[in-house]
Length: 411
Image (cartoon, rainbow, N blue to C red; front, side, top):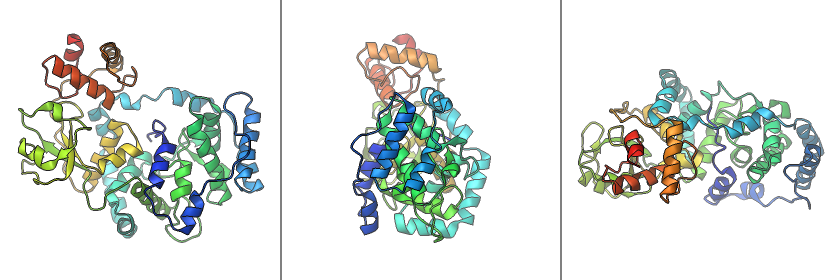
């Protein structure tokens, strides 16, 4: 289970909703909600904060019974704050993370789930354009297809994070949306158990996403993303569609890159026509020619020029909207290609990367040189890779964006 709390979910949801052409019912759901005169304030007395949440929920028209039963579950959970301060899973390099997450069990189970629910997956793809393997990749990585939903009380977790003054603007809307889930009779408060950051259900949607895109996939009158597979698949497909999924287009492709490739062009931000990469000698993983067309693509080398190589396409941006970590997003996208029938990628023989402390030292040195890496957090994100690429160019090294001990020594 991989928390998505490291992205601004409310901002992403707002931009996603702008892509929809809502019918009357959805437009009514998404209309600005009435609010109380006084917003719940972070920090301070927790009981006073909960009273503020209660007033806000009632002002939005939620039933007193739903509000009261929900606030009865709210408390400070110290485990949530510990998790929020210590997110380190994406400090692993891509090969470590992908090899652990895309294991034989998840591949076998994912293919079985695709076959078992073929009719629902087909329906979702017709309606949204999102292929079954894409939905199944998130389903498998987030909860092992519903087997591991989390053990945090959702209302307590969200109340803890909304009361904490680090990111209340992110978590207070989700706390109110969680009460709305109760008000709509989708779930009862004590049923709401999930991840530490408030994600719920078999694909770990945040409560605002649950409310906005929750769909009754089997027509039983209730949207249950904890137990109802049809609801899970339809809702997840609609959410991915809202992020801008482009029907009928690829998302990721493993490729081979020649030794004389101009490495500075291997960057997520450098989008070029696929024909340009073909002209530079990039081929499909099996050595056959790439289509020489205008499809926008970017070449990424998660572990440098001696490791695996991928072309990413516009649909890959949807993975980064789901979770901004490149390690997670590339793993999920690659997993989807495997479920769709792609062969395992050649991992190559990459130079060893840096451990967390060495990466922090590198980031501090890059900051001294005037680069913005987003802080010294020990995680090799896109900002760090961009800075590394610039320093590699300055030092006359192959500018593949992969931080190694050799680079750190030179700096």
